[in-house]
Every structure is written in C-alpha cells, then in structure tokens.
Length: 254
Image (cartoon, rainbow, N blue to C red; front, side):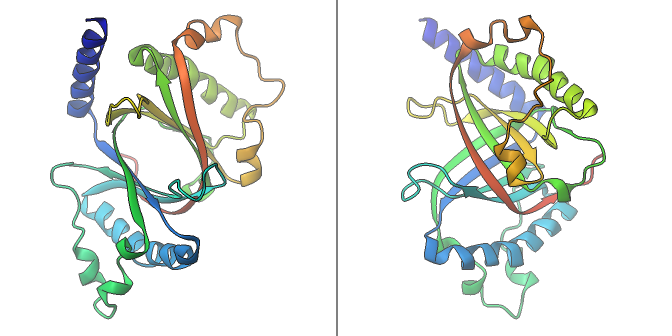
C-alpha cells in the first residue's frame, strides 16, 4: 500500500511539472566506431543548422548532441545523447523541413538512422534551476557530466538541490572555488520501471576535459556540517557519465 501511495504522489507531482514546465527528451543512440565520423558530420553539418532554425521558429528552446567520453561496456552501451527541449511537446518540431533546407543534398546523406541505433528515450521536465558562472558564454560549454539520481523521496531530493546545492554552487562560482561553468537539474517523468529507477537528472558543465575530470571544488571550499543532513539516507545510487558537446542551439534568455 505504501509503494502504491508513493507512486500516486509521484505521478501527481509529474503531472504538475508537465503543466508548469516545458519538456525535454534524452534520446540515446549507439553508433559503431566505423560510422562515428560520418554520423557526427551529418549532425553538425545538417541537423545543427536545422535545430538553429527550429529554435528561431519557436518549436525548440534547446537542442544539443553530445558524444560520450569513456565509460564501461562501450561495445553495447549508447555513445550519443541528443537533447531536445520542446516549447510545445504535442506540436513537436518540423523534422521534415531539414530536407527543404538542403535541396542540393540527397536525404540519404542527411539522415542518421541507417548509421545509428536508437536505444533509450527519456522524458524530463525543465526546472528553473539552471545557473552559469559569470562572464561565460555558450562557447565555454564544451563538456558535460550527466548524472541520474535514484532517491527514495524525489521531492526531498529536488528541495535539497534547489535550496542547498544550487546556492552552494552559485557561491563557489562567485568566489572562484569551482571549475564548473554551469549547473542545472530536471525531474524525470518517464519511464518509471524496475530497471530504470532514476527520478531526477542533473548536469555539471565545464570548459575543458581536464576540468571535467578534476575535483569540481577547490580544497578550501567550506561546507557547513549540517549541509548533508538527510541526504545520504534518501540516496540510493547514481549514474554519471562524461560527454563532449558536439553542437548545440539555444533560445536567447528572456
């Protein structure tokens, strides 16, 4: 009964998030090593320009293609992540317009489905928690650590991130005690299964791979003793991977 009640609460929370926020999708793909160069060429040459136009038209507010760096089970795990943030999920985007944008190029040389395999599709809501370091631009966003969180109480975790973690990172950015150039989080809406137990997602952004692979905070960074109160008891596990930003398109901040 307790599990059923928890599920109902999570579903209601998800419904509230859907009504209040725009929706993003994480689309994971597997690309064979021999096809990676051609795949990235098509994404950066054609689809990146298509995404920029869709952002201009207002169909998308964000698009990015990320290439995974390292990791385990590389022969079987996805190595490409495509992020789409839709202004209206039901309207979606004008996918067919890419053909019209490049009339002198055959569609077989633009499309990517014959050199990649779709593996996972995740829906997330956007929370108003994105922050970036001062004097940075999108050009500084070159590497991203993607983190999925499995927690017992999603609301408690999201409160921790918005009321404790976010202010701490902002303070560290202002004091020059972190190499993170940006941070943000989202709540996962779907799927919710026994094999996919993650309820939220966060991202740490860096300018270099060296920074991304180094400790995120300086040694003199001070954290209050009560900062982690309740966090560990609520936390089950996390899944973290590093990605290189291949291309992106972002709507101007309002």
